[in-house]
Amino acid sequence: MYNGVKAMIEKEKELGGGGVAPANAAATASAEEVKCGSHLKKPADLSGFPVFPANTKSLLSKNLTKEIWDQLKDKKDAHGFDFRSAILSGCQNVDSGIGVYAGSHDSYTTFAPLMDKIIEQYHGHAKTAKHVSDMDFQKLQCPPFSAEDAAMIKSTRIRVGRNLKDLPLGPGITKEQRNSIEQKVV
Image (cartoon, rainbow, N blue to C red; front, side, top):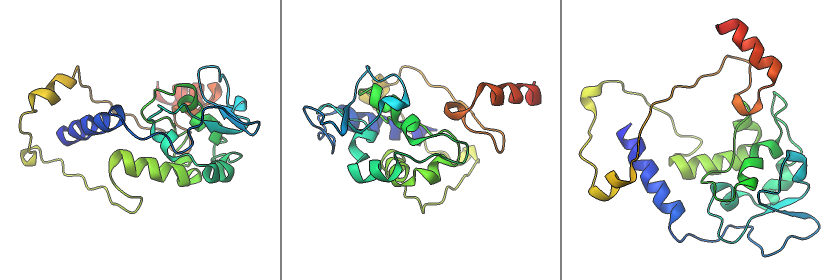
């Protein structure tokens, strides 16, 4: 957890500091483009390539190219969660740090041309990297945070969220599926 907090602090510094304009930044949007902002209300509002304001620092804005948009814009994952739904929040909230949600485990595969880049930049490991868990707390190396880093921490929490097999994740689940989970779990 310590390393995760340190990594998050570094990413926040990167995303918040100066930064480079998004790859697809433009002052105005053409007829085949959609200007990003809070006016977007539903996935169908993304009727063209999303164009972010020049000061947008989200990983979505930095990685969503016209080529990726053209490749994924009409795709849905195995549970019916579509690409426009995956990126809608990041297009609405241009101050977002990441800007994309997975609707199911399959979203990571279906939308891999975008997801792989974002995951590598945010978490610092490539698609081919292997996760290794070592639950021996005695091996933890947790030196104190610097005063600057400690000042950035307002609170911490540990959240464990898992999904039932063959059901989508939170952003892609229907009311009926949610009710089904309640019946199985409660």
